[in-house]
Amino acid sequence: MSESTRLRAYRFGERRRSGMFGTVPPSLAAVGAVALIAGWMAIAGYVPIPICVAVVAGCAWLWFGKIRERPAHEILPALVMWWWRRLRSRNRWYRPVALVADGEATAALPPVLAGLDLYEIDVDWPTIGQTGPVGIVRDRQAGTVTAVVRVCGDGQFGLVDPVGQDMRIDEWGGAIAGFAREHSPVTRVTFHDWTSPMPIRDSVARLESAWADEAEHPARNSYLQLLRDTSATVIDHEVLVEVTVDLNRVSKTRGETSLSIGLRTVSEQTRLFAGRLNTSGLRVESVLSASDLVTAMRVRSDPSAVEHLATLTHSLAAATGTAAPTFGPMYVDDRLGSVVVDGAWHRSWWFARWPRREVAGSWLDSLVFDSDCTRTFTTVFEPLAPSRSDNDVDRERTQREANIETRRRKGFIVRRADEKAVAEVESREIELATGYVECLYTGLLTLTASTSDRLDQQAADLEQVAANAGIELQPLWGRQGDGWVASLPLGRTLARRIGDR
Image (tube, rainbow, N blue to C red):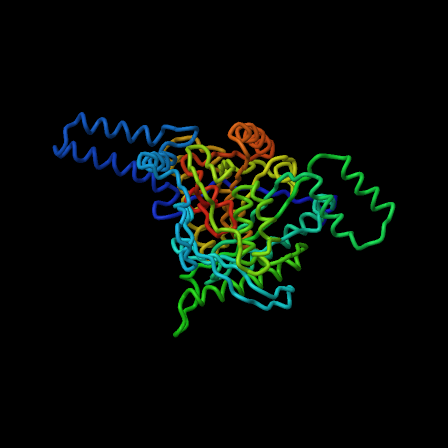
């Protein structure tokens, strides 16, 4: 095989952290600080030594111990907060029923959705064929605004040769790389791949409705009969892509509020991003309106609501513009290992470890396609400015090399993992010098089922499929409500709270 046609392999680095305490998590730094303060107070005579010993022992357990196969200092804060909400009966929420209708009253939302506002603006984008209203979600807590587009491919990625797959991956990466520039207002790009089995009769009914005005043809009748006889269900895929703009990064203009500028900015950035996607082998079907966002949110929260939403869409009230799906669920029960939303059970994981070995471009096919359950695969990308990437590489390389030098000077063995980490930093530096850009990325997975038993059964199968793909899934214990919200096209995520890569 020639050098120009050599197959490319993709690698995933170890989980990286960078911040005030370097690679040390803030929770671990807090544990060490408490132990040091307790020891100093005991030596100074402010507290009895037995109490100090007990505090230091507790800190040592938090430092080295594990809870549910995760470091205790990472998972304990989430468990404490969950139990605190449960003691105050705040983990279960019901939508209040208003005795008097008030059209100006804001929609009641559960605590995990608090701070979200839905806006709609009119746009005219001839370049991508979009004219009409666009829904934008504002997150008051995070200070962001988000627009969502519906994206689909041509279905040929799994059929082309590996060289063609690498070319398409480069084009998709180039579309995201447009945001990795200095002073870019876009802080996050999120892909939601929603998959759900649907009865084959629904697919046949759609085809029959689309072909109702066409003449009868034996080939068409044979194809429809084949669909009826082949299987009871088909797998429905829908990919929604979020573009999130940080209101603190937009350029201020005298006489305008940051919100109005943010709405205009996210609209323009979404238009540009849609144009780049259309030239990268993907097709932007539409930009979601406010009603589309509400419908997508309700369907992903409770797939059984599809029939109700379809009835509401075709009703007389909808035709007159006086009826629309309600934003937000009716009932939320946030449990330790799952969350119940209306009539559906959800369980969320985050990708604690990506494949350790180099993989081909189609390495994720088993997780994306080989599933007969309702699940949402969420990938969060945070483009980094080139200056920040250069600073991160310099800092990490200095830390890695200093660590190796210290081990050698003190007579300790230099581990292969340390040498591999230095080699990966050098590879990153070469790629940045070549012209590539960096993105922080986090993977989340949310499974939806109709019952608790079915959720447990499908969860075991899904974890096995992920393990075969080289992915280690960790349940979001005590934070299942946040995981469910992160799977919705609402611009809210918990990626920065569970670690950077």
